[in-house]
Length: 196
Image (cartoon, rainbow, N blue to C red):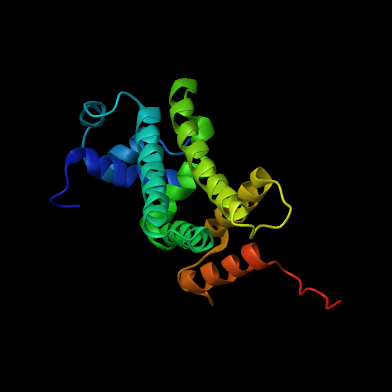
């Protein structure tokens, strides 16, 4: 951790602790031990443990939104864009550190006080809206089956957000393979169409 600022060291170690133990079971004492500084040094940067959690969740949300916006800016075709949005978001899960941040972004939001939770919920809603809007653009070019856009967006997100639970870097499939399989499943379905 040499060369990193104190706040960055605190965040880095908090990510490890919250991922390993969960927010409620991770103690400030453990964080102090891992960072190698006094609790007062930590509280110079954060007023409490919830503020550390907020910082992690907000930063993870910013990275997710940035990746999605990058895909949207770079791809005019709505179907191609949606594929890249899915691929870009899944790519974030393949990086060990980001996967931990994503897990915290998804699983620990409810631990925040209401005011901070609302700020992070806005990010969650923004991610959802980006996907729903893209589904709408696919409908606009008559490439979407008769499915509610909200249901489609939740279906896409729900499928992707479980990946971090079971994906392993040393597993049989790499994230690129999983991304291709999920894109095929989400866009073209599970079953073959019967010939009429």
